[in-house]
Amino acid sequence: MTAITLQPIGILHCDLKKHGETPKNYDESTHEGTIEIYPHFVAGLEGILKGDTIVVLFWLDRADRAVLRVHPRGDESRPKRGVFATRSPARPNPIAVSELLVLDIHNNILNVQGLDILDGTPVIDIKNKIYSDQMK
Amino acid sequence: MTAITLQPIGILHCDLKKHGETPKNYDESTHEGTIEIYPHFVAGLEGILKGDTIVVLFWLDRADRAVLRVHPRGDESRPKRGVFATRSPARPNPIAVSELLVLDIHNNILNVQGLDILDGTPVIDIKNKIYSDQMK
Image (cartoon, rainbow over all chains, first blue to last red; front, top):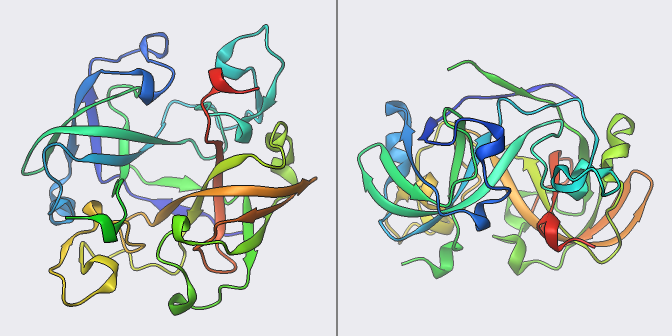
């Protein structure tokens, strides 16, 4: 059980500054923002086009990593359940998986729609939503 | 840009031992295997039931982290594209996102179907596929 080290590939810029402001899930959000990819990783973006849906992995740097049981959607009237049975940001390795629409892409800057993530959150990966054999 | 440290929450056991044996994506696979969650994290599983579809994040410990452009699906007849425009395991932070069917769950052991991941791969997160407000 050796530790695993990630390096951020970029950072999110958007107008969601506080936890209470974020939509509960990306599929409930039309928030727009900008993903800035660090220069070292820009070659990895080749082939991403305006209009694509991308899967973006974020490192939720302000999430509680010690919690294993939560009230679903923070609703205290509902019984707690294990974090692995929820989409809560609180979890041992707080990684969010979001599907975002690419509104525009220029060099290392992607304008995206569908955010439920706080401003300043590190980006750790981007994947094509569509599998390779379906890709243009 | 500080480094991020993950700790594995478990490990995958299955009969996929070599790269050439793995299906290219989980949605093409009916392979079964077992996810063993380490004892410290078992409370996080509460609420996962047989028949659920779960989203499992794996740390692809044998993937190439230095590559930024690949031939889609390893097909050299196709032009290279950026890894972030593909589902290639090769990428700076090699995390796989798989949707798996829970065939059975007992304590810290989940029998799952839909694997395209090598035996011995660390598990770093599990999420409910369904969003919380749709959950039973």
